[in-house]
Length: 64
Image (tube, rainbow, N blue to C red; front, side, top):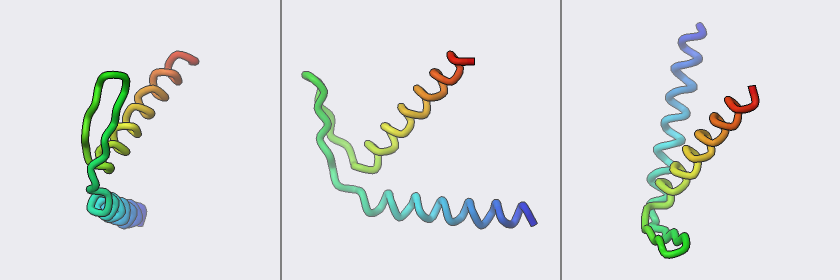
């Protein structure tokens, strides 16, 4: 029963991610000092999320 719930949750999550990616294909310009990059909005959100996860992981390891 638990495997079925995990499967359903995984399918729903992947469907949501797919919808998010297809709806956020607009290119966004990101500028930091002299550095400038253009990328899809979904890629920017994913990059910011990964930076946050990595910083949280490093900060958590430091406080143990």
